[in-house]
Image 1 (spheres, rainbow, N blue to C red):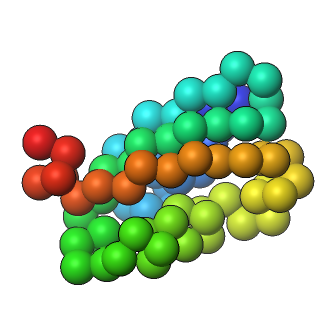
Image 2 (image 1 turned 120 degrees about the vertical axis):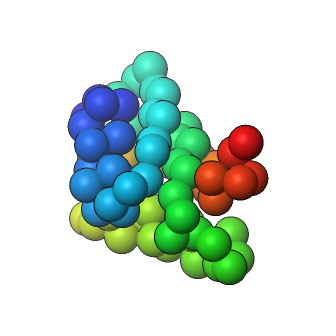
Length: 76
């Protein structure tokens, strides 16, 4: 698994989202995701939305994913 693949999965699964993903070892990653879809949602709900874009890869190919989820205003 690579950061680019994860970024593509997130941005495809959350249309309009922008994701920045880093990770050096192929199983542990950090992502910052900015999406209008996060507006009005608590952090746990936002994280679940991102995890849903990755499906079964979470806990398998992706051992750990630290998330920072923001609306466009929060990111500004």
